[in-house]
Amino acid sequence: MGSLFLSGWPAACCSIFRDPIVKPNFAILSVHEGTNLIACHHFDPTVKAADGGDSTQRRVRVIYLVSRDREEIIEYTAAIEHAIRDLQNWYERQLGGPTFRLSEPVVEVVKSNRPAAWFYGNPNGNDKDNWGFNNTLDEANRQLGAKYNDPKFVWVLYSDGPGNKGRGGSGVTCLPEDDLLGLVGKHPTQKDKLRWIAGLGHELGHAFGLPDLSDTKKHADAIMWTGIYGKYPDKTYLTDDDKKILMRSPFFYHKNNTPVFQKGKVIARYTYQGGAFEQHAGKDPIYWTDTKTSGDAAFTFEESRRDKEHIFLNDTSRGFTVRLPIIGGNSLLSTDSEKTWRPLYQIAEPTSTNRE
Image (cartoon, rainbow, N blue to C red):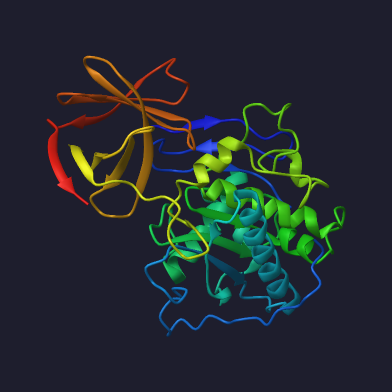
């Protein structure tokens, strides 16, 4: 599929879709006073990757990439851990109990063989503003297997590469040296540490599937808009739509460690080359999952309506509508509230099933 570019954030922010059914909606952003320094943890590549204890739980995995020509700054490591723990508690308060789980160790310090200037200076993609994200993810993929839409981890990747463009989407967020400076109160112009914790909260929201807001006047103080500036933690918030998306995320758990979202058994399956749309039992709403044969990605949709020929599925986190043919045939994708449609997959005739 071709590239699709959408603008979103004012000033230093934008949203980008690459492959509209898999790739992310990135948003540029760089961002409780950090008082307790927390012991750092170093990643040993000879040791099995952290899985947070209970390997059945999906977790947020936080990486601090240290460039070849730099050394770990302990203050950065501690500030990153403080920020992600603070946000874990903030999301819990916003959702009334559920929140995401963290891997152990919370922050993995990984030595790169790339120089600091490489991260945001190495050409990688058509848009220079995306080089930092692309390079950081490539390096984390090479060393740790980080990837888009990882079924097991949401990846938070900090590098000490000089840059000022953070990004988040499709299970990954990448943040540059600017954010590290901000977290320790040493940014040259924005000294408030809370602003940078909130910025991580915003980009993490994108990684969880939250879009930038459509009603920016009504929700100017929301964390998915300009609420990162001077509003965190008590005066910024998640909108009801944001909460709805997170409460169907497989990365959020109740305090007793049960997932907040559990779909019913699969009762119908519409296959295409490389994957399938599966309908789950239940109503109000009816949930569907788009799963890939490789197991690398799964996306949740809500059925919005049916007519005699088609089923309409919405993914509000990505702004997508899929039109499935009831008896099989060509499916279509809309990214503009059904104003226009483009070909998606050739769907086989559906099959009934009772798989859990």
